[in-house]
Length: 509
Ligand code: ZN
Figure 1 (cartoon, rainbow, N blue to C red):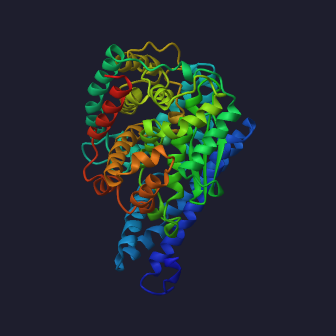
Figure 2: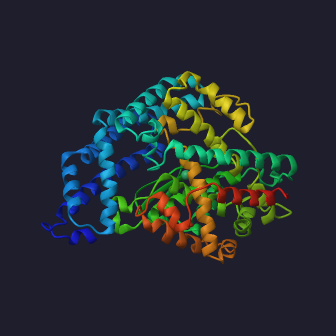
Figure 3: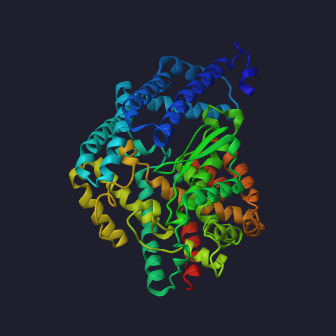
């Protein structure tokens, strides 16, 4: 470890001391991550109140260290000494974290951590009963706390509260930058969906209709995860209501999936998605563990990795060349046997529906567009919490042409706002856009990629992503990484090109 070799009293001592503190903060935060993982997987429901207190304490301890005078002093001293490029990245990021932390009172940090932990249980109960009124007071409280936090954090002139909160997830990204991306997606995606549904040949999905025992699906998912390169000696797969990935370090990366007997591709798709997140975490540079340089860049880049494996690989014709025989066995060897062509087409059916996590690729970003507009309106004070269900339903009517039947399939479907995560949703769309650009770059760099995927040789792509993205940690910002890997800035063109080409082929247009 490079930093252990530093002279204890040399000019690098403040930097070494600062990194030691940063590593301690990471230990606190990764302990909290493990408790949150347990809360979603194995914790008995009655444990919720105690768990909320544990998480609040850990959040406060981490916050106090980063916001404290010792941290501030070390940052100033370390900045005065000469630095190498790696140290410059760590100092830049630690300075950013310190400056954000110092602005928020510890009481507010703890109150947010405890409230969000409790609100998740309340949201789950409200969703199960499709009872928005039950969740409304919690949402109201979370909005108030989040607005207060945003005001503490502040934002540059011309910005707004949403920007201050989104900075947690996608550093440097603002509502003003995101809005035009959605504007450039909305029209073309709406037209594509209409074109496919009015003029295309809808794929036959009946071949995937037979119920498949969850245990058999889980075996297939595990096989695919291993084939993609997820290292189970350094990770786990479990079940949860909402699939997610978390890690304490690159040697302990845990993802969850969920399986439904009557939707055989759902569980496989969500597994490939989470494996994409997991490969990123397992591929981070171990030398820089516990420091910003050893962390992922942003949630948008994180999501690019999951979308890339889930969609660009998992919904490709080539992938089904390899995977169809496995699916054939899981489905109990139907006759006539499944063909890769038929499964590939069925995996890409486009049907506007209510639930974001089950959405096809063409309508997915329209779900996100609705949420982005609504959270902006909530944070700006243009929309009252009581008016959320009606506004949600109006958004679905406008963007997806659907009449939402109840709040369970409407504004109660996602966990995010109950976790206080305002400003998070657009990172899904950023992930789709980054993912398409990165996959285009991979296709240019690796001429043998389609054949490798069709042969189940996923190491070609995984190693390339490992070098280009995973092993870089947060050496570059998301924008810099995009320029370096893809040769251009973030945009919607690669995504629209990819989706239009594939879906028109699927629909035989
Ligand atoms: Zn994801």
